[in-house]
Length: 387
Image (cartoon, rainbow, N blue to C red; front, side, top):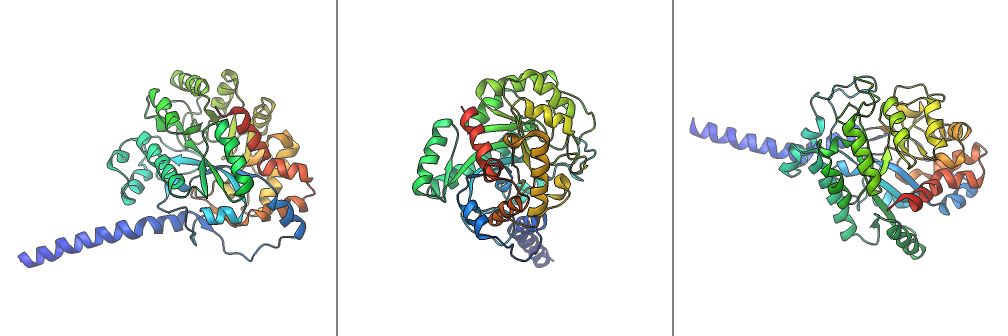
């Protein structure tokens, strides 16, 4: 009997070990899907133009997963080799800290079981991250810092206008250098404590979204239960973010939160990954009228690459959404917000961004318009509003 229990314990430990080894990769592969497709045809004109672009993406969740981004993978959407193949120069790495079980675009309870807790345990994150959302954001930031230290020829962290200027200078002699920035996916990452804004800022965070898929202490989510606007805590948080020079992202915020934030901020807002209601009627997207108000105040609207935002996931549908956005708010207010590695399905990954340039040319956009939406608008915003 004793031998039996010994074998049972050993089998249990072996099963647990295999879970920690294989489960994170299985989840990653199952969540961040690239649909099988034939190679995209890229014309010589598009290839030449694409190679000359400064391409920027406002939203990628790659730090959530247990991948070494310096290496190339055959799953997921982003890693440095694929980003470099796609000529992606500026990447906002957003840190996911909470995701309710049963995630949907219509209605999510803030107290639903949190899937990121399970993922943090499965990926062997520090135990502090199991209970603290701030620690989860900081741990993901630490991963980016370590990557920049280990792989300085391929990644540079950008936290200020001075560092951005240095990045642009270095990229003249190293055209595959990637500039990485840090943002949060929702300000529940504060753990309800305003002092954590300063802590996150000190650790390199330069963009903070206010909500994710559920209502939080700052106010209502577009996919929550209340539809509420900014709370007093939310107003205080926004004021502190503005004082520090943190860029505000309202990509998952309720429409009332967006209205309230527009009323109290002197800095243009970002919608870091989205679509347009008039182009793709979806509970994921706020109204076109509100998008126009964001743009009128100087804001940027970054077009996503997945079905829920643009009613498609191909380069052609991305281009269609961009063309619609230009018609709605103007070419100076449109950017890219892929949501790569954000548990979405696309029909291309970071290595295939030239297919978007091709699709934009096919849509008869001018070279100037293409340069702006593919990255120049993002670059100008960063040059203006980084600390």
